Image (cartoon, rainbow, N blue to C red):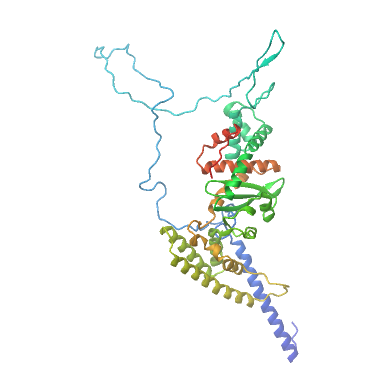
Length: 471
């Protein structure tokens, strides 16, 4: 590099160059830290699913260690296979009385019977029942009289019965057995050759019979004081669509839509009419409905706070996490939380967030943004602090209102089987198939929550007597 002669102009030029390079170095350091943070995100410190973790390293769980041994704990009452009092068949094994005892006596005395029971399945074979419509013609007037076939029986054709249809829907919609493997199962176990087209027709038929159930569940959810909402992506018609979930402890509703946000909720029509309390994960579209009260899933917040503390060194994140977990533990231990504790917790939370937000804003203002126009991009820490400050009431709703849970795990559990279906048996080729799946899964999830027999519930739906929960 050519040496410049010393002068005031050259000195000022070098100072400007050093200042510019310092700004670029500071910006690049911040950018590298941000990119490294993205690489270190996993299911324990972000909203990424566990399936994205891979096998690189063991993920630290947020749960506390209990130091209990694996397996059944002391005092656990196990379930042992019990003998029944009235078996379906009894086979006796007696000695041959024609052979005499070596001692020569022919006098026999009965001893207590020693029995054992074997629970097994009989050979299952499809049974064909022919329904005949018998008619007569009057020999005098010529009028014709005939019997009537049962409902659903179509004359002059073969069709599958209620047992096969309901079992196929049960295997496909509840256990997610794909069409081709389900056809193999019926052929191997029952000797019935089912085509993929027949299976699709079974599912469509079940969906049509559950339309009254869907209408009832929608009305019942609107009258519920507390609901959980969530959504997840699902491939349908070769594009990403969204399955929206709205549920409580007894009812579940799923709806498929091409949009994730407000447009989907408006078309589904439940949230715009709901006036109770909604638990969700801080997705912006939920807050557009201000005619209801909101609470946030603190499990999501704990993961974000864990990331900020471990990857970006934010001490305030660890303090907020500790405060939330201590409040959760206090609520679990106490039958009722006192008003004094609620007030003290809210004040402590507000002071901690307010002080941390001011420090973060000063830190962000000190970082130069060379070449940037408009508003500078906010950091993860800044965005979360702003959200905690804005939605403090929603974050602490679990402690200020006794009936509000700490997290949104109920909605997470409801959506877990949706992702299981996607992994096991693929996606939807048509919108009709996706809508039928959502309707049937709403019914099956509701049956499960109300401890009803799943297969019997499907059969009842085919008979026009679908299970309708009381509330």
